[in-house]
Length: 117
Image (cartoon, rainbow, N blue to C red):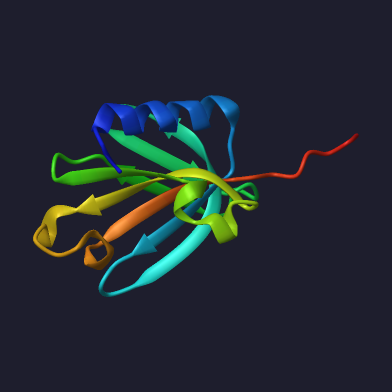
């Protein structure tokens, strides 16, 4: 479901406040990558994720040509035990292509096991 930039930022702010673990998927025509991290810094123009071991960092600038899409466990029922919800950011380089064929970055909240300590 397509959402506005402010709605996406609201979800990023929630994840930042709650220190949620995020799975970050980068899907580009030339490469793909994924890693887990938490939001270390968030402004209206920039997002920074850092892995728990602090060896990996990802910084992204929000641009006007980005489309934001919200997804929740209903979109991936076979993985609903692993993930909560997510935001996919699509780039308008070829906006006539279907979303799944466009360059994108996905952020998905990982369900963490509760520790009983």
